[in-house]
Amino acid sequence: MTAPILETPHLRIPRIGLGTWTLRGAEAQQAVEGALAHGYRHIDTAAMYGNEEAVGAGIAVSGLRRGDIFVTTKVWWTELAPDALRASAEASLKRLGLRQADLVLVHWPAPGMDLPATLGALDRLRRDGLARAVGVSNFPAGLLEHAIALGIGPLAALQVEAHVYLWQDRLAALCRRHGLALTAYAPVAKAKVNDDPVMRAIAAKYDASPVQVALAWLMAQDGVVAIPKSGRPEGQRENLAAASIRLDAEDLAAIAALPKDRRLVNPDFAPDWAA
Image (cartoon, rainbow, N blue to C red; front, side, top):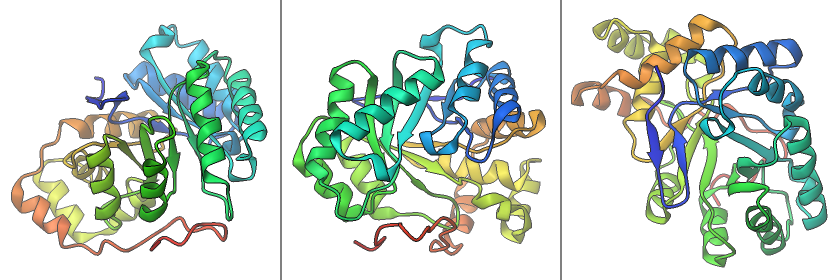
């Protein structure tokens, strides 16, 4: 089984990918190898994750053509000056064993960042062939709007925390209006959905798990991609199979009624989310 594809003006990206945050070394390599064997064609990593070598090794031994795998990596927020951003991206590619990433993102905005300079350096990665597409992660709506308005090359994607307990209508609308894919990290709310009676009831209706229902809900949103993390073969298969679940209007309404303000990832360097 493979995930459905989202096509935008700037990207062609599988709607379910493998998140690799916290996976390291042999565990990360085995997770990537297993995911690709199960039908995943989208792998998400970052310089800060410390696993790009392992991710690259998993890709290398998969036997798949490079063009069949969508690979995202990210530049950390302390490396956003133009020269540092370029060096970080080049180092990521070297660790991954790739000549080009499919998508390179600014991982987090930096306080006081020179946004035009950062976006210019990001777009140069695209123009120089180090990235097929570029985008940003963890940008609040006002900052994303500003970045788009600058018009410094096409931004193809926004990656943010999004799940049944945190939905960001303003960001989603911005992405739809400007043709950006919205990639949801922590898409199953760090497995908190497993203990939710609403999610458990819906899951029983489909002979599925609450995790699968959470992913199916994201797949029901226009222009959304999800990157659940799982190192276990059964978890990987379960996550990928969620793409085949079609929630009905009653289910969607029940999930819509859940709280949508429960942010789980909020480090001390995070931006003002209301900005």
